[in-house]
Image 1 (cartoon, rainbow, N blue to C red):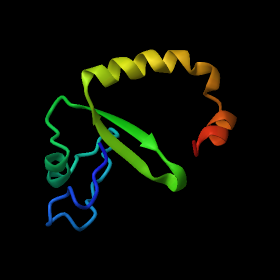
Image 2: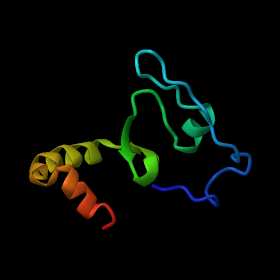
Image 3: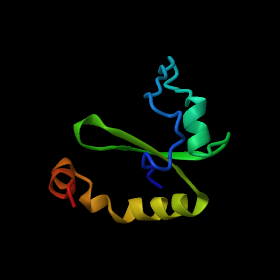
Length: 89
């Protein structure tokens, strides 16, 4: 689910900042965890959009199974050229 400003709490106005640890770990700020209803053990899906924009979303068990099945079937279209050609679809 994408969150528009209308769905966000009024006090959420500033970007939240976190540091990357030496183990590659990031602590998600509490305000973000509350907005996304995140709890320990939740699975997150990371994506990279154009111009380096990173997206993160919470995924449920059904989405994980679907993404796992889908990833194997799309390996033929997983080159950099394919990504460039289909990026804006």
